[in-house]
Length: 105
Image (cartoon, rainbow, N blue to C red):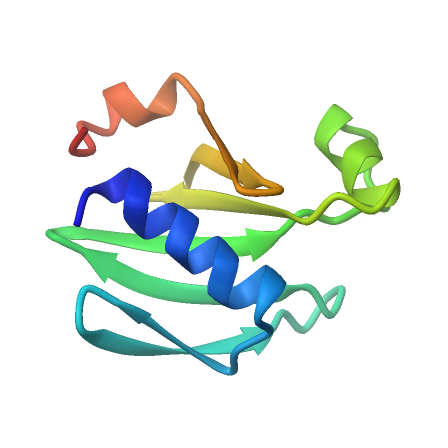
């Protein structure tokens, strides 16, 4: 499984199937709601990287928030304190941090 496949799979399990426990490469991780805004989130491992996935907050002022506010299902992915990608309606968008974090292709 590639990292891209893993991110899309996590999005599918969290945002579409609303699973309380997700599976990534044979490992299971609990999905929960973030305390502050009730947004869905999950922390999981991929290789040596610890990744946090959190639902896009539609009540902020970013372009992604506007899309989430219009009904798109968006999950942001972060590692070591930096967002490196998101999946919106199944479509992966990589940010520049993907390379600087040296995440696998």
